[in-house]
Image (cartoon, rainbow, N blue to C red):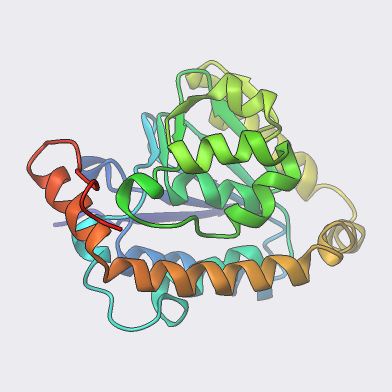
Length: 257
């Protein structure tokens, strides 16, 4: 029997959503995005849920999109499960805590921009290799990152797409704390429990107020990024990047304008 790719557990008013596809480094399929979106939408309406804890398996958060699955998406990404997941997480009214170990690639990094508290293992590696794949940033990264760390640092992460350490993520203001891998989830759960014990309406109001004035920019960024991302998926640069990945070689963009 195939193990479920999303494990859920509700305890102490904390809903844990665990990405569970370790044989594929927790790469996300459209089915998994659909499950995550539905879980978040249900949690938003469930008074028993006060906090969501988002995590992966002990050695991997998520390697990002399952490329072969992702390239099969018809039409605009905003209407696909990945778009529904982005809308559900970016608009989620309750606190979200992330516990990250191992790889956090692509959306594995950008989704952290929509979490309220982020705890990362000291051996974790984060990366946003969109340009290297012939793509553009997604999940409001082009809007949020320059505002967190300034243009030049954001440009380095997004344009060069190189992996960076948990310590660098902390220095850039992307995560709250870097811990030994074995302590990451327990620390995240400890903080989630503290949030769950706070006055619930005051907590919701605080999150709403913190995001109120940036929400319009984030919504616009999400829509525009997805439009360009959708177009790029059909383009020659992605075709070359995927071919190179499958052939285990470096992509050659020299002949592309």
